[in-house]
Image 1 (spheres, each protein chain N blue to C red):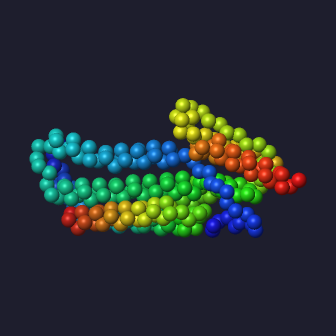
Image 2: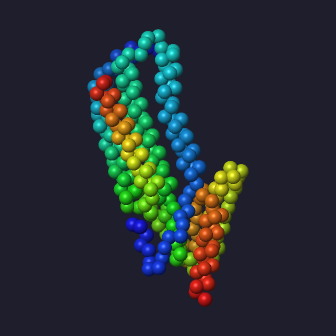
Image 3: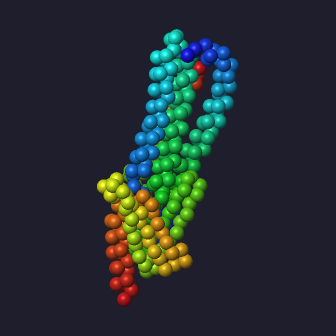
Length: 74
Length: 173
C-alpha cells in the first residue's frame, strides 16, 4: 500500500465540496420527507414516536456537524 | 388521527404492525456496514509502510461521517416503513395501511360485518418462538383479501378482530 497515491489525486479533493453539497441536499430532502410523513401519516401520536423523532434528528445534526468539522479540516 | 377519520361512536381498539425482528435484522446489517470502513482502515494502516497523515485521517473521517449519516437516514426510512405499515382496528372496521417506501401508500378499509374469515399462518422455528406470521382477512367486498406479512403476534390480532366481529354481529341482531 502506498499512501502517496493520495497526494497524486489531491487535486480531486478540491472538488470534494461538490460531493458534500449534493450529498447534504439529498439528506436534507430525505429528512424533510420523513418529517412530513411522520407529521401527516402517524396514526396515533405516541410518546415512543416522539422519542424516536428526537433521536433521529439528534443523530442527523450530530453526524452533519461531525462531517462538517472534518470537511473544514481537509 | 390525520388519515383516518373516525365515525361517530367509533374508537380505535388496537394496532397490528409487522414484527420488530425485521427492523432488528436491518439494524444489525447497517451496524455491520457502519463498522466495515473501520475494519478496512485498520487493515490498510497495518499493511501500510508509512504513518497515516492528518490529511488522510481527516479525509477518511469526513467520508466515514457521511457514510454513517447515510446509514442513519436509511435506518429511519426503514423504520418509517415499519411504523406506518399498520392495521388500525376500530370497533367498526379494519383499516389496512400499506406503506411502501416514502412516496407510496395504499389504504384500504374493510367493515367488520364484511369479514368472512381470518386466517393466520406461522411457518418456521424462529417465527413460532417470536410469534411472527401472516394474517389474512377474507371479505365479502370487492377486494376480497387483506393480508399483513410478518405480523407481530398474528394470533392475538386474530382474536382481537374476531371478538369485534362477534360483537358487531350480536349488535346487528
